[in-house]
Image (tube, rainbow, N blue to C red):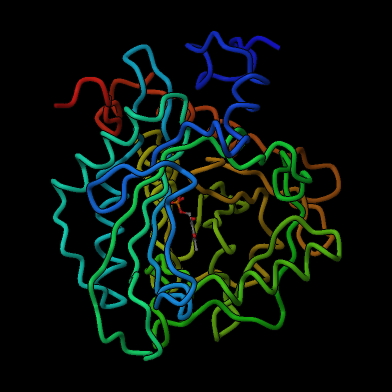
Length: 344
Ligand SMILES: Cc1ncc(COP(=O)(O)O)c(C=O)c1O
């Protein structure tokens, strides 16, 4: 199959067959990706950390996940600055002393994208590589790694079961596990340790046939999904999302809020009860990998009533608008893209 425009904008500039690329990428002997580790490039298969390292044993790794889009001006990274700032904030919140500054990280990210053509995503990790028994690391040196890849080609994502990649979502409101509260690990930190309760809860929900879950705070109000923020459109047409007190400050979340306000859609960031989500006209999740992700039902009840369309009109309009923004097709938001080939 030859890659063409039908597969999506990210693939337009590629003339090799997807099957050929897949075969090359997934065979470990010919895998061509290179990962940046503390300033040096290492082959994909050799990007390793010891089993007994602190981050592996204590879930102390922080990370961020970015989108690369193929544009007429070459590959572009969406909202790089916002993501990198969040990574530095995560480090601060969990006390990881990053030795690297913003400029060094930016050049590492740009160089990694250049070395890995066809990549659609970037994952940056900062972690404690030292072999440790202590919970407080005796060696607090932090390593930083940057990988640029395509999940479908490099991780075989397109061969995995479709759960979680549905076009519209069936959500379950988690009744037992709560989102981490600020007095434990701050929810604003993108740190591995924060994902264990959500993982367990989502796993159980998947077994019951749901795609994803919504987590509540200690008072029973909505927070977010394990890897997405949540929005609703209420009966008055107001776009509402929980405040950032109990959720990760999603880059898609803040982008959507800005774009919606620009388009005259009223937006409120505030406490939202479970009852209010059942009264909503529309609900969607937001995340870097999916943009606006419409929700069709919650706990088996159809969002917006039995005859409501999914996606609803606001979700659909925002989704299409945001895709244009991501592709750099909206002059007002083109400054959110970093064009890799134009940077020094
Ligand atoms: C806990 C959590 N909330 C929300 C999000 C969405 O954030 P973003 O829009 O920056 O991808 C993520 C992303 O992975 C996440 O892990």
